[in-house]
Image 1 (cartoon, rainbow, N blue to C red):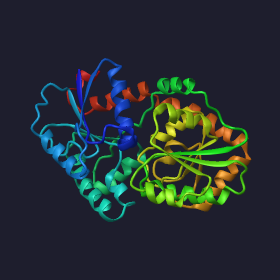
Image 2: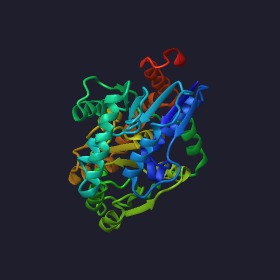
Image 3: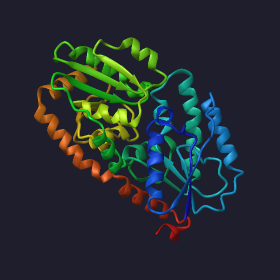
Image 4: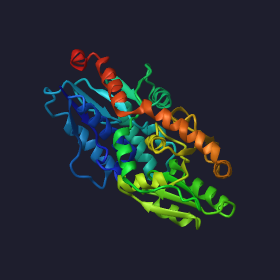
Length: 349
């Protein structure tokens, strides 16, 4: 049994973000079931990412795919394939483009056109949330609703690393953690403003931000005194940050899913997040606030600090909910979705 995962997403957490994590975790979970998965990706990252994605897809046209039972192209990848494939949309590029400006927005619109072609040429479209499915239909005029298979998390692996780090919340401090790539749609600037509003009212308040990206310099210039930027960290260091924090915060206004929400749930941490895109679907138990509203976010952080019982309730609900996203469960769902395409149907049973 052999499946090819086609992706031009950078093969690292720092550059590929949640998309890379989702693809790598899914591949590992499927391999654990005895199925061979080859990740076909560019070997070297080009400075011109959009150009690289186009060149990568042109080259895919000329490869011999006869040795595979199924081809899965992630996001726009696969839009030039001359053979049947499955399009697995992790992030709806046209949706992301609406939150960008300038050259980045123009390049994303170009990539979105390729993704549009991909979903229309695919034998089946899979995506990670009902929100993403609706946006694919709306933005790409797809007549059929995509199949929804959520993102996944390897709970055993995360529990092992959580147990291996000696870290816990400091009773003398109130630590808020945020993790993500620094894109405008992530609204880290809104979180920084919220931190500025509460830092004089919450004893020991500390905001810790993990990540990097195009807005790095701008966000650091906006940072209040309570904020610490940690850059890109290892999984072990990230696990320690999750264990040290009192609250995890995701202020993003555009998420096709939000794998970091699963990581926070696995860590047993309360979540404060913007009630936007797929977030209420993935984490309905979280303390949800108006998107892009620093005042609402500040009020929620203050409430979470003032009410430890509320934090405990949210954390406990998350610890229960994250089980349905465990890698073996979701990998089985993904394989079933592949089987339903009719492409080598019996091979996936």
